[in-house]
Amino acid sequence: MPEELDPFKIAQEQLDTAAAVMNLDRQAHAILRQPMQTVTVNIPVKMRNGATKTFTGFRVLYNNARGPGKGGIRFHPQESIETVKALSAWMTWKCSLANIPYGGAKGGVICDPKSMNPQELENLSRAYIRALGQFIGPDVDVPAPDVYTTPQIMAWMMDEYSKLKGHNEFGVITGKPVEVWGSEGRFDSTAMGGMYVMREAAKMLKLNIKKSKVAIQGFGNAGAFAFELAAKLGAKVVATSDSHGGVYSSKGLDFEKLKEAKEKTGSVVTYKGGEKITNEELLELDDIDVLIPAALENQITTTNADKIRAKLVLELANGPVTPEADKILFERKVLDLPDFLVNSGGVIVSYFEWAQNRQGYYWTQEEVYKRLDTIITKSFTDTIDAQKKYAQAGKKISPRTAAYVIAVSRVANAMKARGWY
Image (cartoon, rainbow, N blue to C red; front, side, top):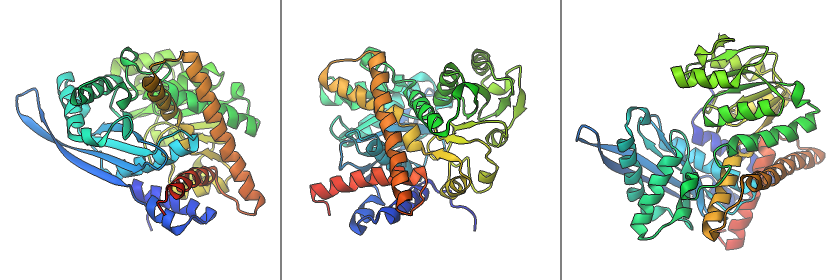
């Protein structure tokens, strides 16, 4: 049978695997298999030609037993409710694993932001908030940027919500510009957190980062920052890519020249000094130590999991490895660290931003990085310790399942304490 790639069914399958390992109460399991609230809205927006176009938007609150919902908003032409539901589930486990006081949520709008001018984007952003204003708030559900949404879009959304409330509500949205009380260190926080995890994993594998070769699929926000930060750690980044394809050089790639090529032509494939490769070929390179999928979901599947040659896979993207592929990598002793551990730096620093907004006291970038390092390193250690604990009891589980067990246990325990089952 063909591998199931429906994102929400994948999220449910991952939960089911962990539930079986930990003997999760069936009542808790039933609650956690579905989101608590799913909202679909029609959003009329006046376009540049004077016509009004109606967009479809979503906001899903998966679980709020441990705190307000937390999760980004995507503007994407292929956005779907199933994807948003899956991402809201993963956000629930991500916040729980990091042990920050949030539940999980996610939002999205079906649109092509690349075809819209700034005024149309602002109109859409504000209209989305007007349509969903009653379902969000600093104590209810706190959105953030995601695919094709920006700090500027977050500022518009925060401003619109503040108008609805009649006073400033900086804490309703995170990922804002620092001018309207975004947090220092927020914009490279996803990649920075991933690098802290890479550092800890390298210690465990006895892998010398300064002698390692890294391939990064994706040169967007997370991928580009990961490239820059990995290079600063001394690693040699030999391959990267975007939606048009990739480039490879065994001697290493030049970050500044890649950035220049991307800015001038819209793609890294025009970079001079490397050979062109496909995104598929990047994943299967045989001379790399660390593979960082930082693009889209479902990139490593049953069709290519047995061809992955890296010793360490760091899932900086959401859902880049399917459940079946995860099993193959685990059997092959490839250390595949799950997305909701590796890319949790973004939500951890979003939590810092929310906390700073609520108290009106702001931290330096150094303070933010130090606190991020402490939290995400503990998440990594907790995951590996849980994996070892189950191994000692005769149950061999992957790092993903170990992380799920921790995260699901915390949410289930909170629901139990609150009397939900």
